[in-house]
Length: 80
Figure 1 (cartoon, rainbow, N blue to C red):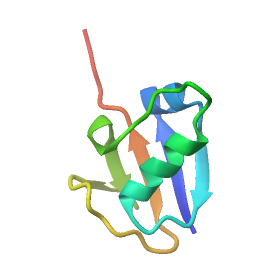
Figure 2 (tube, rainbow, N blue to C red):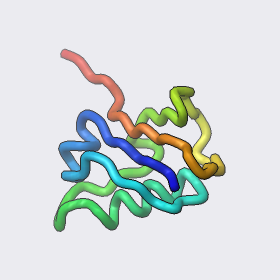
Figure 3 (cartoon, helix red, strand yellow):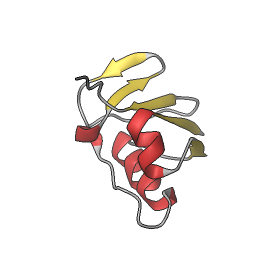
């Protein structure tokens, strides 16, 4: 089981705070997020997020997940 947590714009835009899943790849977590999102919600992909797995930043979209991993999907910071 993989725990996926959303933060920032991804959390607000999807309407999903967190979920548990049996995803085997990082791409699957985005697919599941987009399925679980509120009707009409924005769709998100790896390019829309800063991704951490077990506290380590991941910079490549191709990543295999292991049972017990915790994935954080964070929106990139923006300022004015």
